[in-house]
Image (cartoon, rainbow, N blue to C red; front, side, top):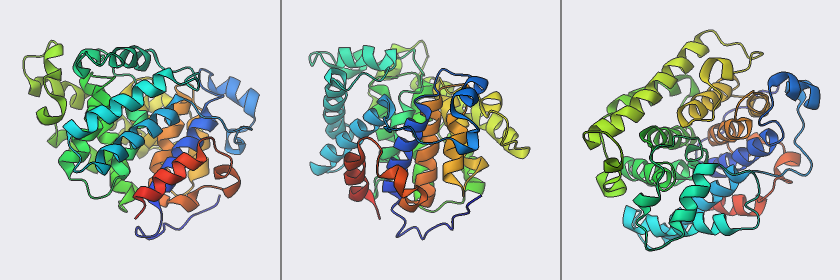
Length: 344
């Protein structure tokens, strides 16, 4: 097993490492999604030796991550990152993706439905939001929010939840997106992976009654909840349960067992977060093995592996990834340009 020394935070190129890692995980998990582990092993061989596919095509996970990143870049080119400045660029990026001929990678139904509604500019974005959906399509694309330097905690949380709310308005989707961005941010800034779950759990508990009205408007009224606080608490409680399952799995880790068995298959937001963290924390200093473990899972393998790559790359930086892999990933030039914008 190759052991990597954690680079100094100031030089490790966390943004580039995270975005490239996300795309590599996406490409590695693309051929294995919808397969159980025996079928993956029959198709790919031993999971610790899984090769990056040739060509290294990605899914809508990477495409939508780039859309979020471009939306943030446009908004911040115009001034301080606030909801009124971010909403339109995100909406434009999402609808552009919706109409793109490259949107042919089996995108999720929630994203397609919401983006079709967002395409009608007369419709307020909250009317397009799918408040009943907590699919992982929102937190699999949120990593750029955690990579932007200089944001306040309120800006980071608000932007993470807003980008989710445009398509996935369920409170658990909002909370999981916020937690994913928080994890990426902490790792990029040099947090010790060993203490990450505790820090995320504390953050989730402290956020249980915090509704970002300036970012979410009256979204909560689309639900059956009695108040905005009750609305968000429902999502944070589900994420706290998922984090508890993760903590239990890590107390007695078994790298050879499918992580989905302990933390969920990843089709829904809180499970995608927990299982991706599970894979990353099994191998915090061996990022390629973490990606392979994530791709060899019975669940939403591309999204789980994409998030695993985002966490590992934020932690270890651009040098985490084999040159022969990173040089042939699809959308490489876009990912490198965005990473260079936010690398510290």
